[in-house]
Amino acid sequence: MKVVCVVAPLHFPVNEIGHGYQPPLGLLSIAGPLLNAGFDVELVDADAGHLTNQDVISHLRQAKAQVALIGHSGSMAANPAALRLIADIKNELPSIGTVYGGVYPTYACNEIMINNSTVDFIVLGEGEETTLDLLTALRNKSHDFGSVKGLAWRSDSKIVVNRRRRPILNLDQFRVAWELVNWSLYPGHHLGGRSAMVQFSRGCPHTCTYCGQWMFWKQWRHRSIAKFVDELQFLYTVHDVQAVWIADENWGHDKYLFRSLLEAIIERKIGISIFCALCAEDVVRDADMLNLYREAGVVCLMMGVESFDKAVLGRVGKNNPYSITTKAVSILRQHGILSVVNVIYGLRDETLRSLLQTLAQLRRMSPDFYNALHLTPLSWTQEGQEIDAARIVQPDQRRWDFRQPVIQPVNFSPKGLAVAVKLSEAFFYFRPTWFFKRFFDRDVVIRRIMRDSFLRLARVYLDEWKELLRSTYLQPGQLLKTRHQLAILMPQKSDGRRATNDLHDISHIQR
Image 1 (cartoon, one colour):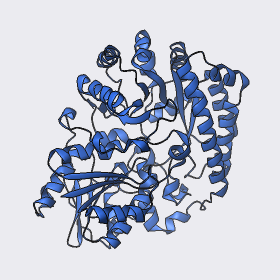
Image 2 (cartoon, rainbow, N blue to C red; image 1 turned 180 degrees about the horizontal axis):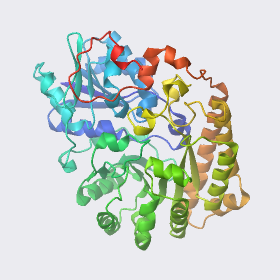
Image 3 (cartoon, rainbow, N blue to C red; image 1 turned 180 degrees about the vertical axis):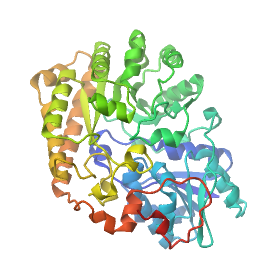
C-alpha cells in the first residue's frame, strides 16, 4: 500500500524568515512503524518545500498514493490550511483515504468531521499504534474500524469516536523514519549544517491551566538514554545535523536521569548544539550541574515564565516566581547559555501600568530573548473553559497562533493591546548595553546565534507589524451569532465514546 505523509503548506513567518524549518517529527515518528510493517511510505513537506496544494495533488497522483496522512506543527492555526489541502485532495482524487492527526484534531475531532466530509479518519493522541492498526485494516480491506483504539471515523451517516488508546509506555519500540527526509529543506540558520527536532520524553508532570500538552501526552515517559544518544550521533555524523531542537515539554523532569543523559552525550563527544525548554525552577535546581548543560551542547534554553504576578502564577499552576526566574537567567549566563523567557499577556486584566511593570521586570532580569505571547483560550483547557465566548473577537483560526489577541481585553482594544505588546518588545531589545554585551560575546557560538537570531527575528517582528496593522476584529458577542465558526474555534473536548449525532446536526456543539 502506497502511503504519503504530507505537511500542509502554512508558511508561518517564524519558519519562513525566522528560525527555519525542521523535519516533521510527528509524521516521521508515524512513518517509522509503517515502514517496518512493509508499507511503501513517502514524505512530502509542502510547507518547507513551498509547494502548492496542486503540487501535492500532482505528486499523489504520480505516486499512485492510496492513503494521505496529513499533519502539521502549530496544530490549531494550521488547521484551516490542512483542511483546505484535504478537501482539494479528495475533490481531485476521491479514492484516496485521508487521515488527519495532531493536537487540535484530537480535541476537535467531532467538529472537524461534522463540517468536513473529505476527512475520512482522525487519529487521536499519539499516532504510532493507531495509524499502524488503521492502515493494516485498510490494507487487509477490513472495515472493522470500531476495534481501532484512538480513532474517529465515519459509519454511514454517523461519526464514531472510538475508545482512546493508552499512552505508549515503551517509546523505544518505534523509530523515526529519518531516511524519508529531504535534508536540503532544513538548513541550520544559526550555526550552519542542518537542523532537526528530536524527542527524548513525552508528557509533562505539571498541569498548567492554559496548556493542553500535558492533557494530550497524558503521563511523562522517556526513551532509553542509549537510543537517544545514538540518534543524536547518527544525525550529526550521517546527515550533518549541527543543531537539534528538543521537542519535549520537560526533558529534565528527573534530575538524576537528566544528569545521566547529559553525561552520556558528553562521553560520546558528539558536538551537536542543543536548543531546548525547561522550567526555571528546574534550572535553579540544577545549579550544581549547569556545567554539564553546556558541555553536552546546550546553547539556548527557553523558560515558560508566563507572568511575574504571584497571584496569576498561583492560579495557573506555575511555580516560578520572579526571583527564581531571575536566578535561572543569571546562572545560565554564567555558564554561557542563552536564555529565552516566554510571557503570556492576558492571564490578567492588562493595564498600561501592568504592561510597564512587566517591561521593567524583564529589563532588570535581562534574558537574552523575550517571547511575547497572547492568551489563546484553548477550549479543552481549564483557562479556555473559563473564558466567556462572547469575548472572542478574532474569528480567523489562522490568527490563533499566540502572536496576537483573540480575546477582547478589559482595558484596551484588541489592536491597542497588540500594539502595546509589540512596543514592549522593541523597548526590551533596543538597549545599548544589552546589544553590545550580547552581540560581541567572546563565545563564538553564542555570538553567531545572537547575531543571526536577532537579524532574522527583526524581520519576523516587522512582518508581524504589517499583519497587525491589517488585522480586523469583531465586536464582543458578535461571534455568538455564528454557531458554526464558534464551534470550530471552541470545540468540545472528545470524551472517547461513540458519537451518535448525525453529520448535519451540530446541535450538540452549540454554546
